[in-house]
Image 1 (cartoon, one colour):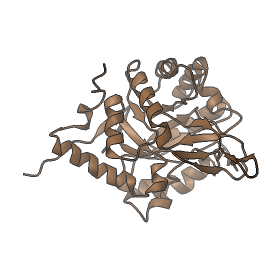
Image 2 (cartoon, helix red, strand yellow; image 1 turned 180 degrees about the vertical axis):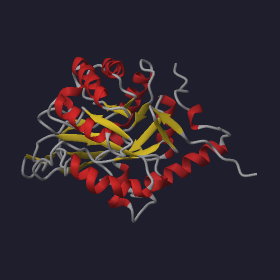
Image 3 (cartoon, one colour; image 1 turned 90 degrees about the vertical axis):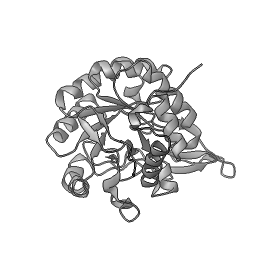
Image 4 (tube, helix red, strand yellow; image 1 turned 135 degrees about the vertical axis):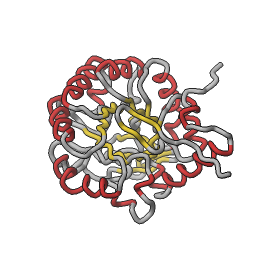
Length: 306
């Protein structure tokens, strides 16, 4: 008899067939990957960060490789939320995949406006990005102040009936108090971590490799920090956690779930292997079957700490 494992889970009002989604900013709007994978098999697609109006982003160069990760300072370049709703959302919904819109703004009012607009669409959930290190207004400036995190979450909550996810920055001294205030403000879930602020220098020109001088570090280098923060946050909140940060293998996923993540997002790994998400879904199901684990939920938070 062929055994099956239950990979499904619920985040707020959102039901997912499996816990693997894409990290915002690493998967575009899905079209870029349709020649490599069946997008409909993903747990969800988290689209590129959206702003109220179209945004050009930062000056180039905006990407630099490091020995164990990638630096970027894209600066939230995107076509704006209205373009997304008109041109990109219909394509993704036609594919039959759950869609999570990552939103960012310069002010709390901009976040609220986007939430109201998206509330009337077929978009399944919002990931509120208050953690981008590459913009001068909003972004991480909001996500590092626990009082602002509470205020912005509660204000957006009033404007949005569906699943509200708050994405946290690791560039803080106490991730737990930030997460607690997001939950108090009405978040249905917390996703973490966004990138860590980093720098790379060209020794010949003696200039930073990024025009913005600094950028967000992602990839395997940040995985231990992400794991630690997922574990710490899981101790103080009662809402689901979406873990991310350097996940490129089945072992990485299991580690994040044992630490307390209910779902995971693949970011930089998409650039290394465009089919990585689908391969990991298949590997995860095989792992559960081979270890006689009936449901993915049986792994969540089951770390045995000393």
